[in-house]
Structures are given as C-alpha cells and as structure tokens.
Image 1 (spheres, protein in one colour):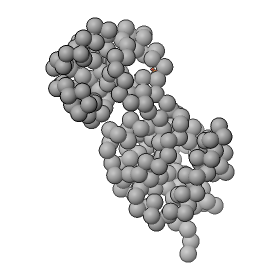
Image 2 (tube, rainbow, N blue to C red):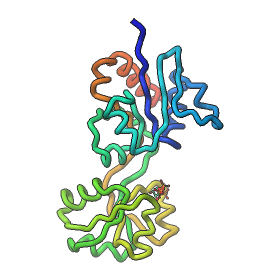
Image 3 (cartoon, protein in one colour):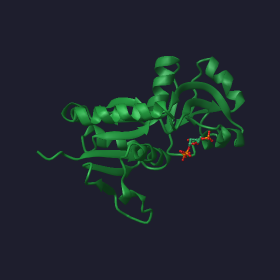
Image 4 (tube, rainbow, N blue to C red):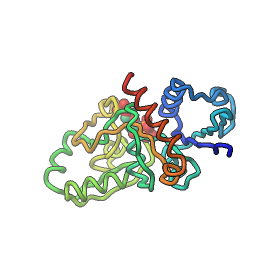
Length: 216
Ligand code: PRP
C-alpha cells in the first residue's frame, strides 16, 4: 500500500524558518517552499510523501488537534494558551524566551498585596492560571492582540503578562520584568491518532531530530 502523506503545520515566521533549516539537515527538504514570491499555501515533497503548510501560530494546535496536520511546530506559549488535545513530543530548544509579568517598577507593590489589579495580555488563559491558581490573587484580565506593552503606558492596565526575549521592548518603554511565569521555546506537537497510526515514521523523525539537536 502507498504511504499516506504526513502533514506538517508550521507557525509562520522565525519558528518555521528554523524548523525548515533543521529538517533540511535531516534530508527533509521542500524546494517548493523556498520560492518567496509564491502565493501557494501548501507544499508537497512527493518522494517522501510529506506536505507542509504555514499558518498563524495559534492555529497550529487547532490543525493538529483535528488531524488536518499530523505534526506541528509552535511556541510553548501558544500550546498552553490554546489548550488543545495534542501530544507535545519534543522541545526544539530554539525560540527561547520567558513568559513574565511586567510593568513599571511601581507596580511591584501591587503584586505583593493581592490587590485587584488590571492585567493586559495576549494570553488570558496563562494570565488567569498564574494569578488565580498560583498566586491566589483576583485580577481583571484584559485581552489585547499585540503591542501589549502599551497597556501600562496609556493607563489601560497596571501590569502585563507577555513574552520577554531580549527585554529591549520593556527597556525602551520604561517597563521591567516583575515576576517570571515560565520559560518558553519551540515545541513539536503531534495528533494523538497520527501518533498511533504512523508511529514508526513519526517516532523516527522525533529521534532523528533529537539526535540532530544534541549535536548543535
Ligand atoms: C513579542 C512580545 C514582546 C516582544 C518581546 O512581540 O509580545 O512585545 O516580542 O521581545 P523583546 O524582549 O526581545 O523586546 P511581537 O514582536 O511578537 O509582537 P506583538 O507585540 O504584536 O505581539
């Protein structure tokens, strides 16, 4: 019987580029994808029976949960926030950053005294879990879709829950890390049914990738 296609969903941007670079080192290439002018959304490697597509990061776990993609690569922040039924099988070790509570230095006190503060974030689930379940602090969470650092600057919120990589966005806006929630990096996720049905192919990929990462 012909092998079926294994489909990869990759979060657009740096994560996808780095993932493709690693796959290439394993001999898994997709020439079609390198044409930057192409408007094609899905790319095929006929020889290896693989398909690849790029999507917005938060959609990657959705495609993988429903089995529209067998395998996905996306940030840990997105995996936690989306809370989909997928297996997280490998920490790819790149895209390292931290999920933090940030704000002006003056907001430190508000975090100490369990005050009912306003928290702006792109990650309401992560923020809620942190404040309610770990800190036992009741807060008002305000969902934003980007440039979250604006929140405390314009008086929308007291603090933010956001990703910090180099810290330069915070520094340039007079904000700082007040508390660290968790470390983040790119992860490989797999659809639970695909993991069973295509165990050998997927398991080999995980092992080859692990091996490659250990040599980097
Ligand atoms: C992310 C994050 C911070 C910034 C952190 O934003 O939300 O704003 O990067 O990086 P730094 O610590 O290196 O400055 P992104 O660029 O993804 O855009 P967004 O603000 O629209 O989410």
